[in-house]
Length: 306
Image (cartoon, rainbow, N blue to C red; front, top):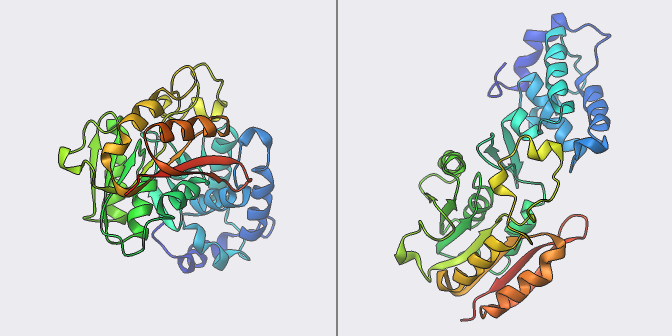
């Protein structure tokens, strides 16, 4: 069954082949949620992850599971779920298994060409949009955009904005282009290159919001097996203290922000004070730290005066 089929299609194909000893969809969701709590899986949200895995195994979207919660799995469906679960327990990230990740209600394609956005990405997006009026018109920029999630969410939330997506990885930009074409058609342009280098010169001083998730992990840091064995290394390491790319970005940043334009980026909690200092040294004001769902400061924002 493809994920484009509806949940109501399922009983006709599985009802006669659903032994009662196999779990119902609801029971499987509960059991899988508990499995996702295993420390080695590093799950940010076990329930969401369970929904993604079960839905993928059944060939439906997560939103369609509720209609099937009392139906028992067929032998075929149960076998497919066990194959999916085996991949996850072998530390393959759920996003790569499913081929998608949902952020703020938008479903993004994701594969090994790009870093998988974490569930705290809305903190970065919210920090960027917090001081941008809903009727704003003009340009937004997402630097080190990966699959394009932050910039596309910004454009989706502010229909008057055109978004530029930029990343040093050609592969990631190809994926960002696919996502933009699906989710904000006609309102995004993608650029492959280092930070601001590939952008048109006439964009200087025009961005009312810039979001960024540059590499900020210090070189030599030991990353979890799930991350280092699957996700692109270029997305993580940022020099001896993790801030080499951030320093270069911040140095050029004021020239690209419009007067009153807002900048927001993710960083490690231990780097928040340093990043704020770097931003202030470039003349940016209203610097703030933003907390994630656990109450930890992971995002910094600032504003160009004017």
